[in-house]
Amino acid sequence: MTSRRDFFKLAGMAGGAVAVSGVSRVAMAALPEPVIQTSAETMAPLVPNSGRPYNPVVTLNGWTLPWRMNQGVKEFHLVAEPVVREMAPGFKAHLWGYNGQSPGPTIEVVEGDHVRIFVTNKLPEHTSVHWHGQRLPNGMDGVTGLTQPAIPVGKTFVYEFVARRPGTFMYHPHADEMTQMAMGMMGFWVTHPKTKHPLIDEAQRDFCFLLNAYDVDPGSYTPKIMTMLDFNLWSWNSRIFPGIDSLNVRLNDKVRIRIGNLTMTNHPIHVHGHEFTVTGTDGGPTPKGSRWPEVTTDIAVGQMRQIELVADEEGDWAFHCHKSHHTMNAMGHDVPTLIGVDHTGVGKKINHLIPDYMVMGERGMADMAEMEMPLPDNTVPMMTGDGPFGSVQMGGMFSVLKVRKHQKPGDYKDPGWFKHPEGTVAHEYTGPLAAPARFKAEGGQSMPRAQKPASPTEVQIRKPTSHSGH
Ligand SMILES: [Cu+2]
Image (cartoon, rainbow, N blue to C red):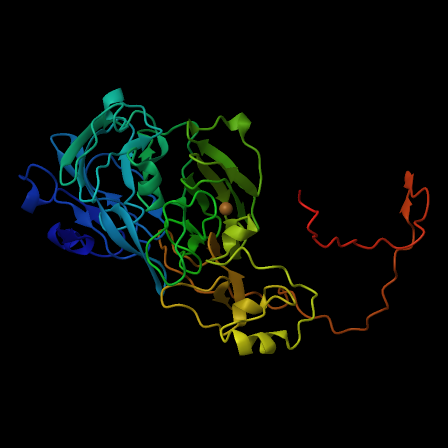
């Protein structure tokens, strides 16, 4: 097997945006030599130099699978195998994936391409690959038992079809799905239009990533596959903030972001500072009359959404799932809310009995981001990530859209933090403060309160007795 960098060395390529050609060393082999990626860095777009041209996508913390042309057929080789995925610096998970990573590499083709994909199974159990959303012959759909026998351990199967419609797709097993998807087996697929398409605009930046989720106990490595809803790691391409790379673009670029959801719940994806339109769904590009501006779009389970915006506001713009528990890393959900409870000294007393006990959350949870809390060896803090003004107090499905005047076309490098123009950052007010004027009326306008309560309402606490609960 060859690493991706060796592959390009072999193919005689070098530098920034890499191009790929047929590999002479293996050109005569029966199947293309699999290319393995071990890094979780965002790789430069794979500019095609065989087959028809297109503007390639950038996979967040991922890469695109090289191919070879074999008598007009685009040949890919996927290897389903156990992988070690760095989900964030300092935290590695033992997942299953393809070609060294979870998710697997992105597959990019052009509408009308004849595609042949070899799938080698190096997992400890059988598998299959379903090409989610594609038009294809029924026997290529990858549903174990229904359209094909499962790919046994150690065997290689071949899938072959024509990429009939342009759009955003995914691939994942249709064999012991609960286990295999909970372990991270999935990948992205983009079919570019073959000619100028009336509903597909040119974009200067084209990003893609999958929404996925894991349940890995702090200090352990392997996801708990029986978890149905209560995941503790909400990830983009099996990465969690601060491990998710920023989306770096040039001012006024047209930016396309393709997102697929393979978790067990929906994710309202939200961009700051810009409006976007949904230009594509699972079914392909949306009719222009169906597009409207918005800043959040909900992506349901199994769906793909393609959003587009013009990045015309410079800055570092938060880009995240709007479910606040999805922008957190591993945490316990059975912690009581103690906001407003004075528990001075309680911790000390309990410490005599339980040395590791920590009282937290008296003023909210923000303190946790700064707390020097001992963590098990292999995990990340629940709320973390340092920005130019302190802790960002985030985790999970969170990244930053970095819009810069001086970002060069085609340059995806992180430009660093935004330098705000003088006087454009929220700051402390130091002038005189008037005493607050309390709003006095009760109800008002059309709904005045009919009668004042005799005494203020108090919460009645009913203690459990032997008679309660039946
Ligand atoms: Cu979410």
